[in-house]
Image (cartoon, rainbow, N blue to C red; front, top):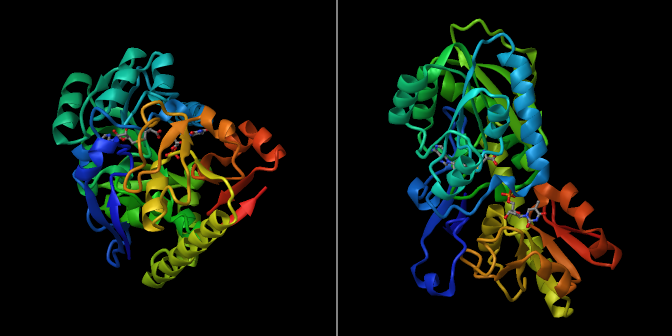
Length: 394
Ligand code: SAH
Ligand code: TMP
């Protein structure tokens, strides 16, 4: 399935950058052999992860709490008995997760290729190596610190094109009973909710347990546990350990794999249906916004998420239908949205504009946002949502 020409999702631009904007064809495929669902073509990682990366993890209070609970749980499950544990985080961004291990006084290293977000983590006193996760950095960490008792990551592994190298490097770096625990947006949720906006340049894979187990077992890693998460509209936390480690396999693994089989995540027909659902979602959203425009309603977007780049470009929605998008991230403000050039404005402009309708692009943060924006709903403002289907919700 092709979503058409797509720009870099987080490349918010100035007027003068428009003529040189980069586009690629965003098509996805399902591999009938290893059962992964992934992009067929992807831009070079350096185009997205560099010194002007626009996503700072710490913008969400909810996610801060989530990562505190995540690290606490990892400590309880795996680090209690280990003397002087060593923790590695792949893609630590501004330190939202690894900071919790730093606060506990644990030896730690974060690996982060995007310089600007890495600098925020460094300024908080976190040990960060500015690099992609690859064989060289793995060897240098092993040389300087030894093997890792815990390798963790969140919303990063799906960004790394060479999945085999991830598994290979993780197996080298893990101590004999070390664990690799990471979470990612979940394919089961994307299929169930038609949340096609989880697919963009950075998200090369949308993982299922079946697909990851197949891919990682080739490199001596066994899937020992699975824990569904509510974050990012439905995520899965995967626990892997070395094949010959002492870790038993939790019954959750079999239970969730059975649910995936029942959902048809291993079958091409499921993805053919997904394609039809995406096309319907696109046509419903465009019809709704066109009708509101004809009625003279004031419509803006809420949160310039990377996901919104997929929605706007796939549905061909521009400033004609959505006047602007408000966002709390300073480096996005004053810029234009990738590909469709909708202006991004300060958060304060949202209430100043007094919209009739707001498209909730950060639908994964709905609880937090709706609580914060009670005034908007009380004044009669309406939210437009497109997951799981296009609907208006006062
Ligand atoms: N873990 C954070 C950040 C997710 S954003 C959170 O969940 O909020 C993805 C991060 O992965 C970015 O900071 C990006 O720079 C980093 N990243 C991308 N490719 C990477 C790679 N190959 N190795 C390590 N980090 C990578
Ligand atoms: P994400 O969906 O990829 O996590 O991106 C979140 C984006 O949404 C980020 O640009 C910040 C923005 N945002 C707001 O503008 N207001 C909010 O209340 C929240 C939670 C996020």
